[in-house]
Image (cartoon, rainbow, N blue to C red):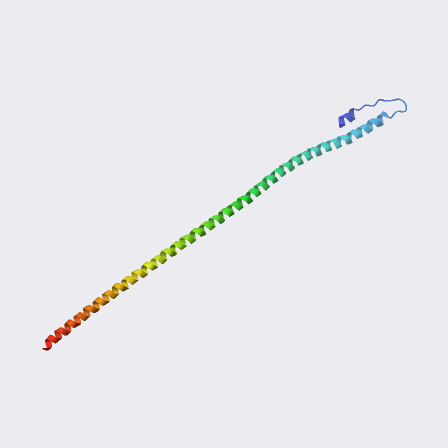
Amino acid sequence: MITPLDIENKKFSKQMMNGYSVEEVDDFLDDLTHDYTKNFKEVTELKAKVEELTQSLEQYKAIEQTLQSTLLMAQTTAEDVKKVAQQQAEQIIKESKINAQKQVNELENSVVAKKKQLEDIKKQFDIYKAKMESLLIAQLELLKDINKEDVY
């Protein structure tokens, strides 16, 4: 690429006859140098800006990739936590059912034992009642015998 300095330092061979006006060529080259310098600086600045924007774009792409990876990892972690919570809930329910069944069985056994105890007490009461009846009958017979003796 031709630089502004190349244009400024360019020298043409001058002819005396039928040649260009040296002054006009120099003025044109000065104008060309000025415009080319301006364009050259602008292109250089734009290239630098493009490079800077390209680097920023790469940086943002890297950040985007990191965010996507983080989001994916967060989703995976959330699913894992959800699965673990579900398993724990199922385990708690299972253990609760087992404990409830165990308590029901213990209560049923207790009811059976209390019924047996009640039956035993009823039998003892019946035995006691029969003994009392016998005692009262014996006492009544004794009183009858005593009353018969007092009559004679």
